[in-house]
Length: 103
Image (tube, rainbow, N blue to C red):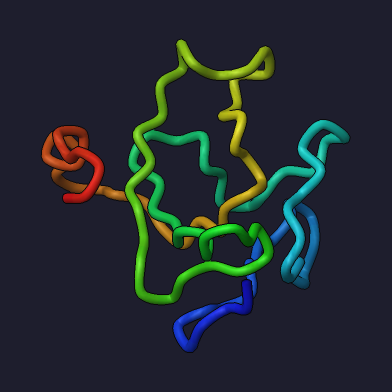
């Protein structure tokens, strides 16, 4: 589908780069990692537009509940490099941890 008015291109800054990547997830399996990783409990990122991995919804975000027991061999989330993280919960993580889908 065509992105709506609140759609923004996926934006991720790879580590060691000065310019962000737009509309493409990073190739984490080849060692490309974001400056702001998703694999941290409390990461805040924009949701994807349904059916599109290249656009995010500028009006919806989520708090990522990272569980190391569900991580891959490198200790990273399987979704690492596919979401544009823009911050982290720094206070009240216990409250953020109690959030459920739809809150």
